Length: 273
Image (tube, rainbow, N blue to C red; front, side, top):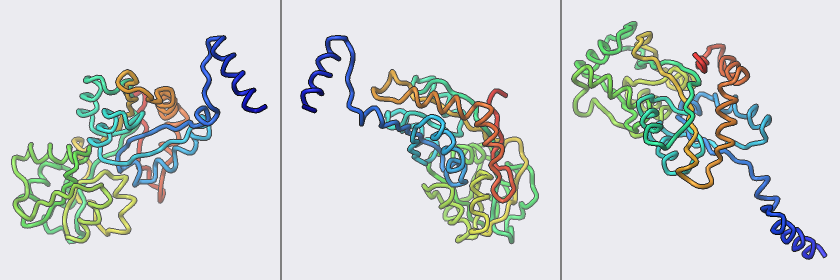
């Protein structure tokens, strides 16, 4: 009897020009988000996403990698939306037609951290290029992300402006996420460039100190971009749009501002500014 009713439903659906989908497919509401390690390691997404998921009935599957890889996942159609922080790469992603509907979300800043003994003598500097010059000219180690992340892109731009960088074994290209690089810097008594949010999450574990901050060149904006549904079949563009609208809405922006682990605000809302 059950099979007969199912057949009748299919026939009626075809006759009326309706499509029939099994209930299981209708209930599978999943949004794939590629994002940077900073939003994941800092705890921001674990704090933000449950509110969105509850409101829209969508489960967000987070893939946390460097910005370059996050955008590559979008190009391949492996995610529906991406939240990253490398404006030059973001603009290229959109210009090439892989992404649409880019919006500013928030910002924080980069800082240089290193051992408390500060062998390069850069502690208290507010000129990142001057600090990088001193680090390059001193026999100290610098750990690079080396993963084409937003942080890695920014760091490479600083060395290019300086015209030099640490030589030989003093420059370590890790090819790892920010958390792992901070652990490496602590173990190797080295310096590194990091976003402030991830440093905050790893500060107690690593014992590294902030040595350079406050340079306007270290401003670190984040943008959210929907993957272009015309490039790949099956992209959840509706869900991507809902996340973009929510995270840039007064509700989403207020939650970003309220995220203060240990009482310190790590991200500052910027939608519509």
